[in-house]
Image (cartoon, rainbow over all chains, first blue to last red; front, top):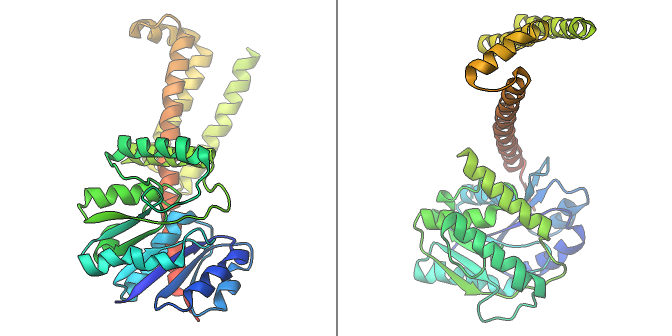
Length: 220
Length: 109
């Protein structure tokens, strides 16, 4: 199985080495998408046996993931994993997230911070931000999944060919969820661990996601 | 009187620029006419304010000035929407170009 791990990175010079060191022992093709970082992210990544794609202009996370997807598909990827550069996710859990695709014929698997495993999530996020995010997903797409903004996911080749990420910003999480449902792909959630270095999306970022989604609905 | 002369001067400058843009083929014929007519209306309304009042009464709006405000708001919102859609399209195109460039210049280590 050709497994590609896509890691979008924006100014992750300091952290990316850690993730890449952990990944270097595993049989995955690692693709870094450097989103026009102003630091030495590309150079830091180039010290490892990885593929580096560099955006000349910052296009944000959703755009980076789609760039990674497109490249991986062109290289014959059979499974694509979306991962994070700053060590939020555990490398050891990649095998759990690709398992259902390889063994059980699933199309898309999402890591969920709300199933079983313990993630030390900030209180505000757990009890305030995420309930709202879930409500937004439900209002827009009629989706009920436990983790609305999970950035850790895996998809089969077939799914990656069908799901074209058009939301360049952070709204890609909701977009991918919605496309999984509208395309009737076989999806499931698996438990995952998240290590919080910082809050991640702040409330302003959350508002921007809602705005992006609203506008995309308006225009279409 | 002074205001009318000032506005006329202003409109003449704009019309001049409009003609130049049209000559240089930077403006489609339809948008040229739309702008041309819009600025002509501005001229007429400033020299003959009664025309606006007359039109307003005809449409069931009290004052000519109100009619102008309503119309302006509609036009501004329409233009805003158009700009917004256009920006979105440009954004998508930039992403596409950046993506193709990144994939073309891939670095394998």
